[in-house]
Length: 308
Image (cartoon, rainbow, N blue to C red; front, side, top):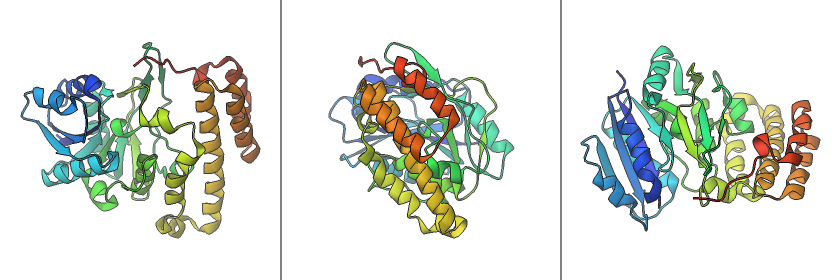
């Protein structure tokens, strides 16, 4: 049985953290330890973590240094403790009961893979949700260079050897740091998808989250995109011509993401301008058809509910 280290970077999530931690305690896979890294919270985050009396849970407290620093502190402890694999769970999200069991089985079945991944669901404040497509599988490097395929690390179980080889999260990136990290993992091997119809991770959509705070700002994506597309290891693998093509695709993908999020935030005209820009840069019949959904703000363009 794989020994799994679950790393929870936590900043001012006292209202949500107990559910997140309880979802790990309730797992059908029993061989885990949980590392909560309180990143300088000013609320009761550390107190909530400390109230749970389970010897498998440890708490690290640090001055506020950002989510990458918090994850890296957790990585150091997990690898030192000899865990076979690591999962990064955000402090306001929660796992399905069998998430670790399914991910561990998938990783065991694919000794060549750097990580196993499953589906996730986004859950709004009104309890409405959206289930992701089937989890991606195989060599994902080029697809990840175009766009982030994962909600966050909560539906990925990463082999310790891959983490040790890839290194830590970049602390100079405040948004998209996970996207950049997944590309470095993908350089080292394939991902293996869990064959399950249900979500392994539930992602809470709430005001104040990093995603909702930055997703409508085109400039927020730029540092991570530049970090990815200036990585010399990718150019050595793919060649300069392919790199230029992938960057153009990534820029078009970012324009689409910005447009979608602007519409979800109620800025329909601004959002549709960005959708149009994306289609001009990378024509796509499926997305051309999807623009009709944007007028009704349904499907991927559904509005956020501003209730915490």
